[in-house]
Structures are given as C-alpha cells and as structure tokens.
Length: 171
Ligand code: GDP
Ligand code: MG
View 1: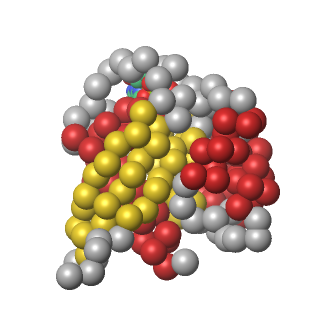
View 2 (view 1 turned 180 degrees about the vertical axis):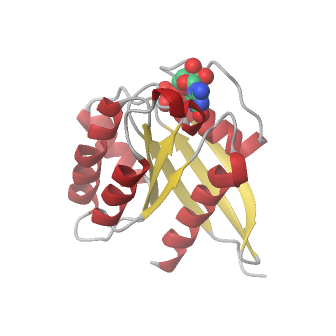
View 3 (view 1 turned 90 degrees about the vertical axis):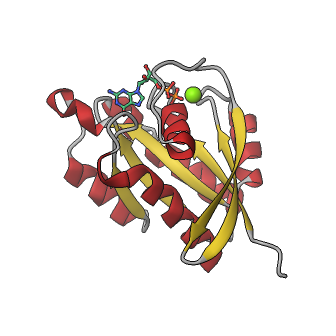
C-alpha cells in the first residue's frame, strides 16, 4: 500500500493571537484557556481529507522568535497558517511582514498559506473588519477564515487546516 502523504504545517502569528488554542481545538475539539505563551510544540495528527489519509506534523510556534528562528521554521514547513486576532490591529499588521519573509525564504516556490482571523467571538471589541481580512487574503491569493478557538462555530478551525493540507498537496 502507498504510504500516506505527510505534510508539515507551521502556525505563525504574534504572541497571544490564539495559535496554541487553535491547534489544540483542531486536535482535540476542546478549548483550553491558558497555555505557556513561550512554549513551542509539535504535534502529529492524522485526518481523512477527500478520502485520503493525510498525516500532519503541526508546529505551534511561540510567536516571539527572532528572525533566524522564524526562517528555520519556514524552511521546515510545507504549508503555513498565519493567524491574527480580530481584536488586535497590531497582530493584523504583522501578517504582511510574515508573508514577505515566507516568500523570501521559500523563493522561488509558491507558498501554500491560509489566513486566519481568530477570536471572532469577541465581535464587540473587534478592531479588524471581516472585509479587511478578506482583502488581505485576496492580495496574498490565499484562503481566509474568521474563527474562534473557543466557539468554533461551523468547524471553521478544522476547515482552515484541511484546506491548507489540500493546498500543500496541490503543489
Ligand atoms: P498564542 O500565544 O498565539 O499561542 O495564544 P494562546 O493560544 O496562548 O491564546 C492567548 C490568549 O487568548 C489566551 O488567554 C486564550 O485563552 C485566548 N484565546 C485564544 N483563542 C481565543 C478565542 O478564539 N476567543 C477568545 N475569546 N479568547 C481566545
Ligand atoms: Mg502559544
């Protein structure tokens, strides 16, 4: 039997945007309120995506790395989730520079990517409009999801990871 494909996914974004919460939500369907923000972890996970078993290795970065460490993680990954927090405009402004660094590290390859605006349950303190996220994703030619690691309505969190796997497999 053919070996099931393996994809390496790395999650990037400013510290506090909810990267760990999203990864744990995806893996366990649960929400856990507090993680050590300085912790970096990798997880293995298998999922059936379009009738194919895909093994994912997921790197949850701390979001406080220096450029060299970031570049190392980018070289390691096949696909990337860039996360911002819809209640933190600064985290949205960090998306562009992360994308540029990715492009530079992966050059001349096209980088499989999804953009995630997290904490959609906090709509009352929103600082970044949905259309702004959509526009940025269109500029980066990638899929966009607004979601909440704690509410996860409609399963957008899994959808984002699965779509990224598809994107990696298409290349
Ligand atoms: P990381 O530094 O990007 O890994 O962020 P964490 O996953 O550690 O989350 C940072 C803080 O945001 C924690 O206090 C989480 O409980 C909170 N958080 C994460 N995701 C959500 C979310 O979707 N909604 C809300 N309301 N809080 C969240
Ligand atoms: Mg974390």
